[in-house]
Length: 72
Image: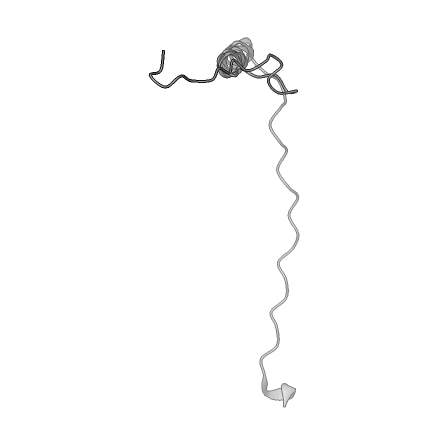
């Protein structure tokens, strides 16, 4: 009984999208971005310096000695 259901209202007209803002970047923004990237690089370097192994693993021999009875 679709003849009893109300008709769908017409769609509103399509409006054009607004123009995006210009892609110009001010010198302040460039300086801020450069400072943020430098901070990220410093943090990354700080983390890397705490890693004691290379990607290949530990490359030097382990210092192993047999313990004596009294630990000397």
